[in-house]
Length: 329
Image (cartoon, rainbow, N blue to C red):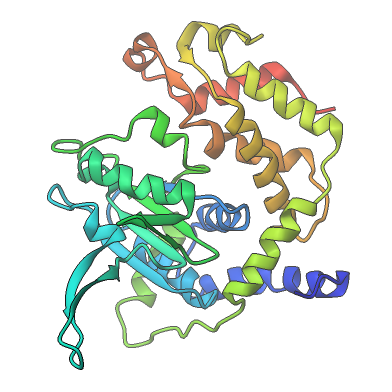
């Protein structure tokens, strides 16, 4: 592996080209694309929430093509079993000896990028199989351990509208996702561009910009990015401030049941470093932290029943906490 500064700079210089290539197919949604790339660069996984028709699948597939990484999509259903994801053993026969043996047939999880579509539509047993693979980055079957590809990114989606017949992820399982990304409707001019560009004969060709090995090197580079002690102290205050027991914010104490754990602080440091690299910097700035506070904390803060009755969201709690903590020194 080439670790020279010039080599790393050449890789970082390709990141804007990568985003430009994705933009050939995906109109708008720049914030969501940035956050998915940040999750990949920080070696984490993300939960993507949006109503149907916002091109979630196309977005992830296009990113995989531009990164020249293997891509698999799994549609989660109530009857999906763990073996449908991780794989299963099949009985085969050696044609020369006639002996029969079991062979492990790898499931769709053995890909660089796996889109787990509508993860909340499958029972907890199947969800747990996916989440275990996310954590361990390997699959154990029949006493044998199988390593998953590197890099490895799970992007799970869920529909915020239809909740009938769903199995919401427990809070402890949500914490395994590095980022919780919310997709919004496109702007009027963006939607007009989608209508014009997707109903004709033209199909944009996505060029390969980075390889899977390039992304592994970028993941190593992310950890070397500089972050000052002052910013780390502020991140620690932010995470501890999300907990009602230790928060200086009256808003948090009044509307939240519990806040983020130490994993949130680790995620914020790593993702801030990844955002710095994505923007061509080798040092974290306060804006990196403030921008990423929402996708990192929104699924790690539990609002109480009174807050839910008043339609007060986790994003509002984060906004108030950032305001109460004041500027980053």
